Length: 295
Ligand code: NDP
Image (cartoon, rainbow, N blue to C red; front, side):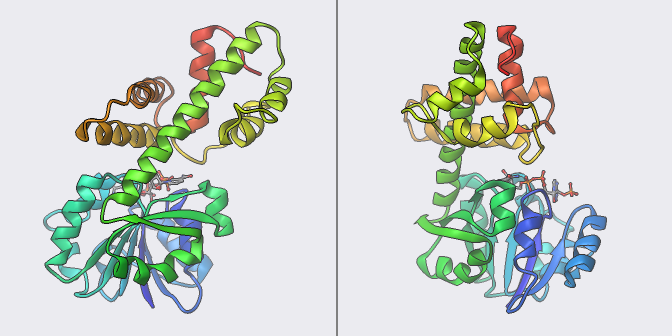
C-alpha cells in the first residue's frame, strides 16, 4: 500500500511512524524538509522535497496540517500538487479541519475520482505514540472502509460519524468540551486556592466526585500541579478548533453561548501567551486575572 504522509508535526510524526512498516510503503513530506529527511533516515522510508513529488505514486494520501487552510493551500496554483494526485486514490485528511473546506476539497477531488475522508484524531501525542488514537471520520462508507487499514495503524477507535465534514464537526465539538473543561477546572481551582484549599487535595476530591473530567483527572495532575506544562498541543490549535466549533453552531442556528465564550477566552489566551504555548497553559491566564496561583 503506497502511502504519502504530509505534515510531520507533534502529532503527525508519531502517527507516520506507525505507517513506516509493512504492508505500507511510506513516503513523507514536511514543509521544513530537514524534518522529513531525518524521519526518513530514522524509519528507513522515502522522503520527498515537495508535496507533489510525495503523492505522485501514492494510492493513499494522508495530511496532518494545522488547519484546513494549509490543506487547501497544497492545491495552490503552481504547486503541481493537484495534477500529481493519482486518479482513483484516497485522500485522508487527519487535520482537525473545518467541514466547509472539507466539502470543497471533496468535490474538487471527485473530478479525478479521488475519494476524500476527513479523519481528525484525538488522544494527544501519547495516543499517537501508542497507536491508540480515536479517529472520527466523515465520508462515504466505502471510502472510510478503504481508509480503515491505514487508520488502524495509529488508531484504536475508528468511527464513521457521517458524510464528508462529519468527522471535522465531531472533532470541533470535542475540542469545545476540552476547552471548557480546562477553563472551568482552572476557575474552580483558583477560587479554592483563594480559600486556602490545596489544588492536589481539591483534585483528589473532584476526581472521586461528579465534577471530574479528563482535565481534572489527567491534564491538571500531570501539568498544572508541578507546573510542568510540556508543549504537546499548541494553544493556537485549540483556539482554531474553538472558532470552528463556534462557527458551526452559528451557521446551523444553534444558540451556543458556552462555546462562543470559550472561543473568545481561548482567543484572548492565545494572544496573551503566544501561539506556541501549550493549551493547558491557559490556566496561567486564569491565575493572572484572579491574582492567585492555582498550585
Ligand atoms: P504542529 O504545529 O506540531 O505541526 C504542524 C505541521 O504542519 C508541521 O509539520 C508544519 O511544518 C506543517 N505546516 C504548518 N504550516 C504549514 C503550511 N503553510 N504548509 C505546509 N505545512 C505546514 O501541529 P500538530 O502536529 O500538533 O497538529 C496537526 C493537526 O492535528 C492540527 O489540526 C491539530 O489541531 C491536530 N491535533 C493535534 C494534536 C496534538 O496533541 N498535537 C492532537 C489531536 C489533533 P513545519 O515542520 O515546517 O513547521
